Image (tube, rainbow, N blue to C red; front, side):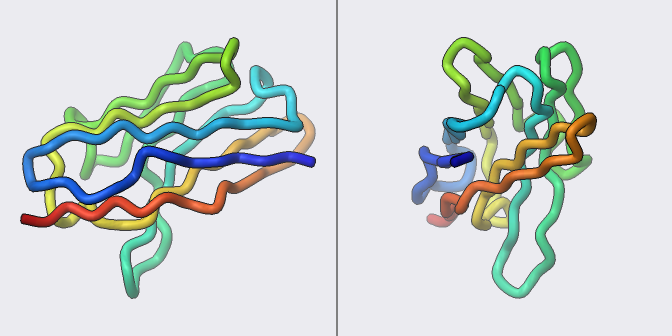
Length: 118
């Protein structure tokens, strides 16, 4: 059974930092591109960041570029999202997603809440 379990969310003041983690099990993690998405109340789920299966390439939404960093540790089956200079508009539930394009499989985690507020 495939599981993606996010952790690290919480309440932080504007300008603060958080690091999210997503631990994967039940799949060959190193063959999956991993992404982070987020969904704010009343809004569509949106792309945040993506990292290729080897970690060689990353890309980001314009809204987080320069503030967020995605990384992965294939030995630990974990993907991370380091979030710095957080803004109130970053408040959302953050989800991790795994994609194996060859097998055409996609998996989602359950999400972790991030709230940026003073």
